[in-house]
Image: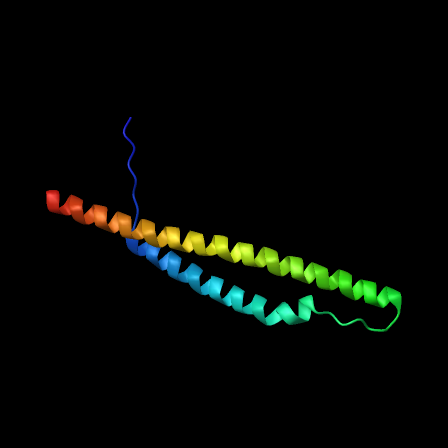
Amino acid sequence: MPFFVSAEPQALSAAASTLQSLGAATTASNAAAATTTTEIAPPAADEVSLMLAAFFSSHGQQYQAHASQGAAGHQELVQSLLTSSSAYASTEAVNRESL
């Protein structure tokens, strides 16, 4: 049984553009929050306050690391959509010429 693939190159490009904008906004938000989430000042000078500030700062640093990895994966998805859009458009152009 033959299988057919139907793709709209313009839709793929539009999706990539939308995702690129969302990714840029998310990256900017993460960057804006980086200092306040990774460098938490202890509320007092006692040992418990110092430990809690270090604990929460560590979580903020872990979040930033994971957010960075997520942004890289997101960028790969955007690039894949753009590459696919171009490939489908090229294939359609070749198919039209052969008819």
